[in-house]
Image 1 (cartoon, protein in one colour):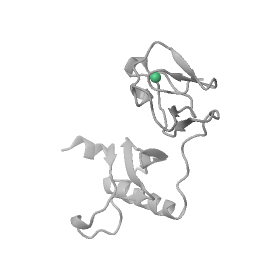
Image 2 (tube, rainbow, N blue to C red):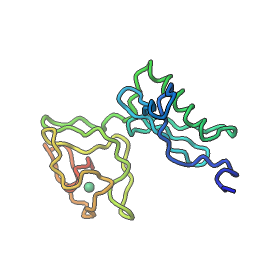
Image 3 (cartoon, rainbow, N blue to C red):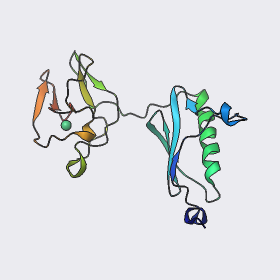
Image 4 (cartoon, rainbow, N blue to C red):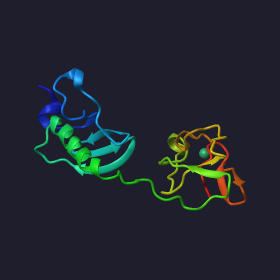
Length: 167
Ligand SMILES: [Zn+2]
């Protein structure tokens, strides 16, 4: 007997399908706007993502089974379809001089593994003329432990390796 079924553990990664498919061939991924809907469940806690951005956290009722996770996601998507998807990214902490911009992608930490340090909400990677000149694309993968930075435009201090705003 499968232990997971006995305990009703719903943990896992879900890729809900759009409602209405009558055959497997008809099955389409579930989208809100241009964002694909996915769900990660840990125990009874469901994290719903839209286009890779965390959208909401929900405690699943004890009566839920695996298939209910899919219909719950479809219901959330249907409710959101009429309304614009709320912007989950916080505002940047500061304005940037001309020529500099932020890559509006959530940063969850700076540095890799044991060297990771938390990053305040609203901190992003700085782009120069819309491009990333940095050796490391994601701050989460940054291996620079030197704490050296470079001032850009005299206004913003960024990590030399990944371009994270550390002002
Ligand atoms: Zn870095």
